[in-house]
Image (tube, rainbow, N blue to C red; front, top):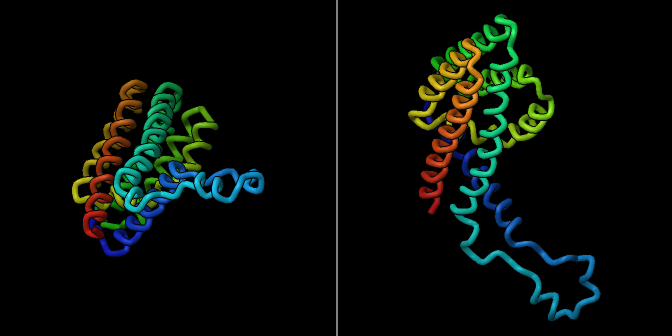
Length: 208
């Protein structure tokens, strides 16, 4: 799958957004509720602004890393619980069918199809992990991951590796190996993070 112009533009916007979020957390504005009680000079002294050049790659990597850390923990748990709780072979087989559908879209080099198939695959995983809260939290995060998925999957080596990782997860689910399923899911997320970081670094270097 090629890393087309639109993907680079999307990833660039994502990088800027993560940078802004990280800087907003680090360089907080003073409490506006007490602004009228302090002398003007004190208010000015207490107002911190992000120094020029501080909202760069380190902040972007921190923001991305935080998202992937949470995702890895929760998806690892979800995969482990899916394997432990699954008592219907048909449910596991359906996961396998979703994995096949993902492979078809990948071979067709259809980026939109890949993202749709991955969404359906994760829906199957979360619907059968036995924990509605984990599903709710991850679904709230996935909206942030749409561009990150595009970024990581368009890395030249990422998609074939991603498919192999999902095959490994499916194998663990079929054998009901909860530990292996959790490990496979966490590895999948960790490798996705590495690919996304590498692509974002390349984009940052192009913009410098």
